[in-house]
Image (cartoon, rainbow, N blue to C red):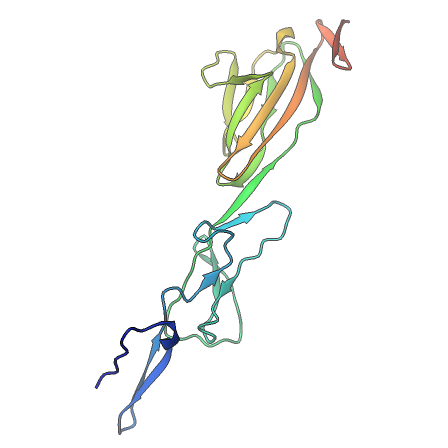
Length: 208
């Protein structure tokens, strides 16, 4: 014996039960593929996280009110909604959470002793992982520069600018720019030398 529904639609989802004249019965749960609706900012594009603001993720299972909702992050279970019966059916939906960039700002200015190393760290976080560009003044610095080294730092590619021995000519504005598919931010510091060269007063140079 079979039950046939021509041109089935979402209204035909639910629990069906067949009984024989005896003591045995069997139930069948019918669901649709798109039964779970998420609160993605853009369908299929995930949720955008803004650092410092609440993150709210939702899975709407209104078409299956008796289904158990279980949350996973990176494949590991987080929590479940109690007091709900679990049916013999697996429903799932994935929300990809992406984040705008959080960039630690530089001080407006700083001093390095002449002949000492000059190290600047670009502390940027985001998802996807930010890409980093470095500028000295208006000029972008690439990995092939012989004196100025761009190194990885704390899991971030190109997250550190390094000059082994700073000199008078290294006084300048240093800018870190972090960017990904969602965002682009930057921060700038003005470095000057201290020692046998010169000092800085209100961004004007004088002999010491």
